[in-house]
Length: 80
Image (cartoon, rainbow, N blue to C red; front, top):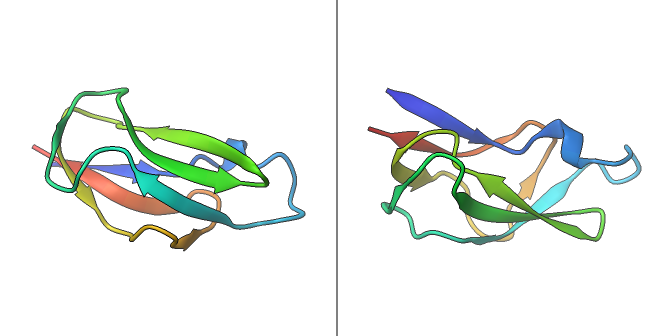
């Protein structure tokens, strides 16, 4: 079963800059992560936000560092 890692739309304070950038993955691709653990850092409107693991399992990073993302975008998933 997969749990998708999404960039929450609530992180955008306005619609002035409707895109974010994946600054870095905080855990390596293939790492075992726990629910609520920070797995990625996304820059949105000059602020850096941590994206948390939605489940416990194996991390799969689906986008590369410096990828442009929109509100609600899926950037990776957790597999069991």
